[in-house]
Image (cartoon, rainbow, N blue to C red; front, side, top):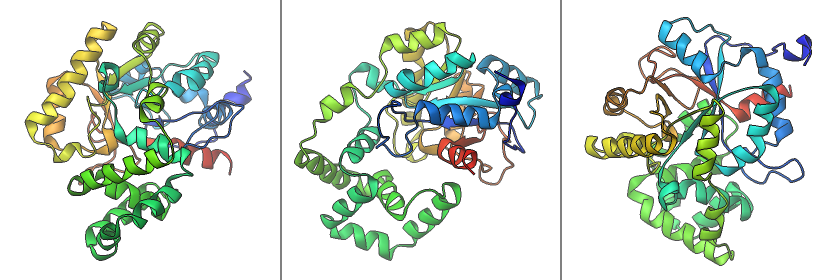
Length: 323
């Protein structure tokens, strides 16, 4: 690759991670929200500058020494999705790049994570916007919740400040999905819609996540596999201390046993955490944690804590690359 091709057009005021989730093959249309093709992924890598991307060990070394530069970047993949191995990892290999991979453990031990399963199903049912309209048509009380409470208005305003590419239906869907008081009815109606569309959740989940061998392959290739909780709860910060401890201890124990290496990094599922979370992570020897946006944590400066490092979403990166 030429020097010109490696030069960055991306400007950064702070070191941060680049956040990736879903991918699809070059020969198919990306029906999943935010899904990238290998070509999209390569476009982002070249836009930010391959030479600016640090391998996990180098990122961690500079973080610990306090020598990270504003131009320093790292690659992060959340949720342990099979598409990341199939379509993103070969691009990384071609450029000699290594990344952080943050995975929840339940799917490797017979469980499922409904938030991701529902996102996959939504794509097969016409997308989040169409799904949300169908959901609200069956749930009149939800419309009242969205229209008559300050809580949703505040949530939507904050989300759109961080992720301006979300639609109104995105915000409505995520608010109802993540709200503990509405969880049971949300999941009941989602399951009904999935069944009526003839979709099989077991079949979807079978193709959705990585296998044990994939994690071993990544670790053996110089990548770092880190924590993302055990069950990926909708709101980690709403869980009591003991429940949070269980989420991260089980995740830590599983990954250590599977890979033979103790995790030292993590990302906060759905950007949810509190002071208890940070204390638990520190007690487990986690030295680097990532938020899911480029803002500062509440009442702090950006990257004020090594467990609260900033990340830029791939959708924003791809939009910038095409400007």
